[in-house]
Length: 446
Image (cartoon, one colour):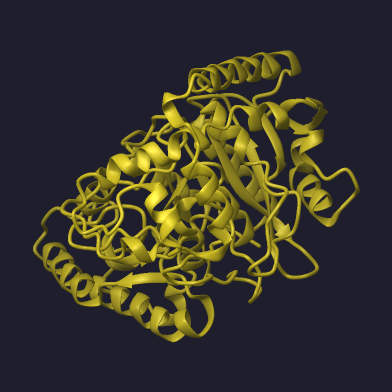
C-alpha cells in the first residue's frame, strides 16, 4: 500500500493490507502523521494534540504481536483520532478551551480503552467547538477548523476536527460526541456517515459533559460498512440485518419552505426508496422545549472539574467571568452560567417533556406506517467561518433519545456536501445501519 492509497482507504482495505503484509502498522501511523504534517496547519486546522512518538511505539508493538501470532483485535494497526473532550490517559482533556489545556487525564475513558483493546493506534486529539457548546467549531484553544471540501466554510460542530480528519485523509476513523447534533452536523458538512446511538447505548464516562442526559459519543467514518464496524466495536453489539423493508417518511417541516438545492438533493438521494411525505408541524418547537442542555451544563461541568486540580477554574461562572473563551461563546456561556440549573422546579418538567415527546414519536411512526423519518441534517448551507449557523434539525434525536444517522446525499453546486438524516425509534440502530448501506449503494460515494 502506498501513501496515496491510505488517504481514502476503508477500514476493511487497511485490515486486508495489514493481513497480507503489504503495509505495516508503523507505516500506517507514519502515513497518518505525514498527512497531518503536510495539511493540518496549512489548510484544515483539525488537530489540537498530536502524540507521534507514542503512536509509533504502539504501532511497533502492534506489528510485533501480528508477527508472532498474538491477539491483534479488529482495529489492530489502524490509526484513530479522539475528540478533545474525551479522556485519554496522559493526554490533555482541554475540550477546545484554553482554560483546560493543563488538565491531564489520569485514565482512559471506557470507549478509549475499548479502542485500545481492539488494537487501535491512537495518534492524537481533534479540534472542537469550545466545551462542545456550539456547532461552528469556534475554539479559544485552536481557532476554527476549516471544512474539508471548501476552505473558509464551517465544518460543523462540535466534533469539527474529528469529521475533517476523516474526510481529509488523516485517519479512517475518528470519535466525536453528540449532544444536539455534534456528530451528525459535521458528518453532513464533510460528506461522511456519522451515527448517534440510542440514549444510554454508549458510556459517557470520561467525557467532559455538556448535558449528561443528551451527551453520547459517536463514530465518524468513510463508509457505511466502516460505520457499522466502529459502532459494533464501541457498543459491543452485533447488529443483524433487519428483516423488514425501509419505510421512509419525509418530514415536510424539516425542509426549507422555499425549494432549495439542499431540499432537492435530499429528495433525490432517497427517491429510489419511494418515501412518503409526512407532516408534524409542531415537532421542531416541541424538540426545542425539551432541550435540557441549559439546565445541565453548569452543574455537570462543575462536577467534572471538581477533582481536576490542574484546572484554573472549576465552575462555568468562573470561566464566563474570566473572559478566556472564544468570542462566539460570549452569550451561551454567560447565559448558561446564570441558569438556575438542575435545582430549578422546571428541570423535572423538561425531563417529562422529553419522555412525552418520545412517546408521541412512537405514535407518529405507527400512525404514518413508517420506520424511518428523513430530512436534511441542516436546512441551510454551511456558513463562512465566524458566522452563526442556523437550520439544524438534529435536536430531535438528542431530546427524544432516539438514534439517528447522517448520510451523504450529494454535493451542492458550490462544492460542499449535503447530508440527509434518518431518525429511527430507540434500539433500531440495525435499521439505520441497513439504510446507510442501501443508500450508499444507491447514491454512490460523493
